[in-house]
Length: 203
Image (cartoon, rainbow, N blue to C red; front, side):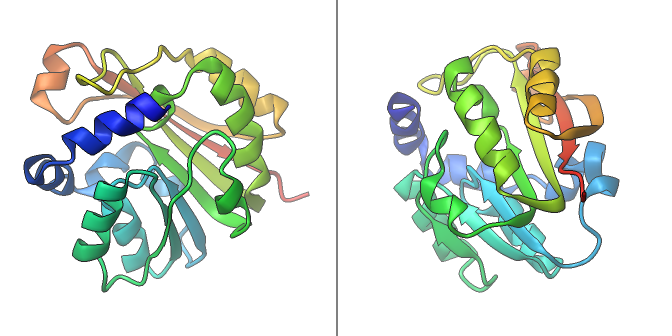
C-alpha cells in the first residue's frame, strides 16, 4: 500500500489534479445515482483524492468525512474545497482505525480505490467498512478492472468474490452494474468498471 501511496504522491501534479477535478461526479455515479441517499446524512468518502466527490455530496447537504492518506492530494483538496464544510482525515485501508471513530455512516463510498489493495487487505477492509454503516446504510464500490497507471498498480478484482465476501459481512447486494471508463485512454487499454451498492439491513 505504501508503494501505491508514494505513486499517487509523485503523480499529484497540478495537471493530474485538474484532470481529476474535471469529472462530473453525477456522471460518474450515474450507474447508482438512484440508490444514493435522498435526504442529508453522514457520508464517508474513502480515498477521496482532492475531495471532488466529497464536495459534491456536501453540496447535497450531507455531512462528509473526506478520507485521504496522500498529503499532496489532501492539501490540494483543502485549498480547493475549503468552503464546502468537509471534515478531512488522514487514514488508510485496510484498518481505517481513525475513520471508524467518526461513524456510523449512512453512506460509505470507495470510487476507484478497491483495486489498489490486494485480496488479503480486502478481507480485512470489507468487515471494517460493513461495521462503519448505520442500519440501512449503504456501501458503494466502484471497481476498476484493467491495468493501473504507472506507479499505481491495480490488483485484479473478481466481482463474484466481492459480492460473496460482502454477503459474509451481512451486506445485501442492491446493484451490480458494468460501466465503461470515462477516459478515452483507459477505454483504449480495455479498462472497465463495475459499480456495486450494498446495504446493511435495518434489523
